[in-house]
Image 1: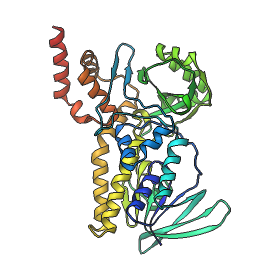
Image 2: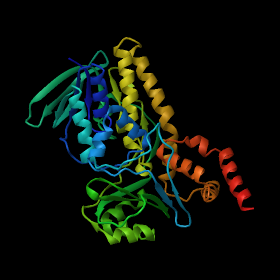
Image 3: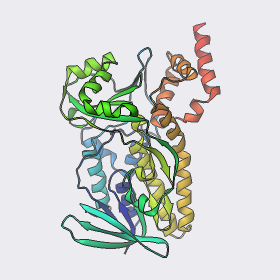
Length: 403
């Protein structure tokens, strides 16, 4: 019998498995895929996520893959261009945009090295239960071998369409639907340019370097346009890129070396992340639009919080239900402000006048511009930075300096 069975071995599942194994627990990690393998992703890891990798002793492995670190970012709204460096998370100043073929393999390998039993190519078909409590999993390997395993807790880390969440009937709340669709691809041989976020009319464009000398370019469109965009992705993608002349010049100077990847399946929701014998982590418990690229970093932090909760329970410090309720509280307290912020940005509408005034007032104010980028990175409090008092202070300071 295992202490924990974790279903899903990407950015939520592998870390929580690794952490529990390092605490001395017997863990089974299963995934229907094999690694390395790709998945749709914005790739980006902000400073809080990089800080997790450093804490876990995995940051040097990521560096060794040649993925370029990024410290300075751009914000190009056409009539406004800002350049800044988000405040650090602890002593971590860098961000990275690794390919998921690279990152997820690092995470799975680290779990195995920690003593986790890793079963790739394993499909979970059922959860087992007794007396209203989840007790394990039933599934099969690719060769058809049927397997049943038991555990003190089953953790679903199996993505936004989580089978575990569906089987246990995890309650959804703060559901906001779908606002946007997203497509991306990879370019080579681009001239030097600043990784930037480029909002345009009903579009959002992003570029950042990744592994193997490539740059990922992302374009987001309103969900109402999904079917039209899907019918000719390249035409619509490059038309969106042409709305940002500097980005257009950079991409057209290079070569696209892969197909377009994309989806219109981008729901925004929270799920209650625990119940009798089960818990959820990563996208299985909380999913939002990728426009702020927070998914990987949030999964890493949630893995830390969940592992601590499970350890508190299994060590006898707290009852399991109480420890998992605290995990739920911590997760929502930390992640809800970014969720609300993300849902606003994902509507791809022009910002309201006070925010436009704030953006314009940031010009020439590098300290506040860096803090603005910190709200995107998750190192500056969104409620504090966007409070009416703080906006008035920044706008007032700009007006005084101009007058």
